[in-house]
Image (cartoon, rainbow, N blue to C red; front, side):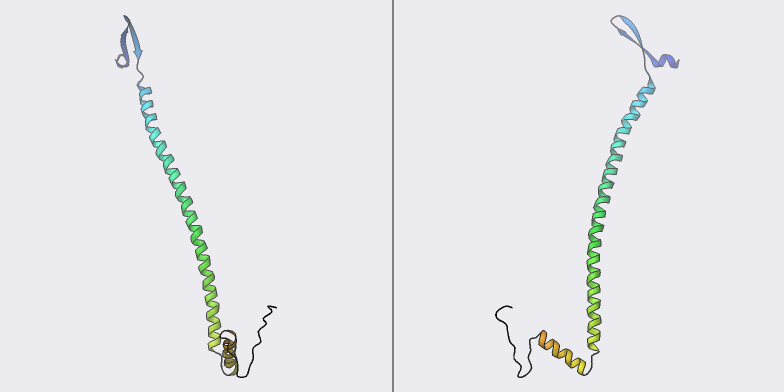
Length: 123
């Protein structure tokens, strides 16, 4: 009886034609139609993931460069702190020499009776 259900009779131009209906092919077509959106979704997810990974790796590279620059600044600041701690411990003549050096070089001070000669020729 199942075979009879699968086979259908059609009348075409006065002739009876028996057409076999293959349900397996219909099921395969339905399954194929389900695979297409699934494949598109998987492909979209892969593209999105790749794009996200690339953008995150670029951001990591930028932040690494910023971190390196900050570490350099920290090192420079630590060296300056050590120098200032050494200067803080100066006593007596060493301290006076340091103060005199800063006054002459940074503040352009002169001792009493001292003359400064400026070379105007540029050499």
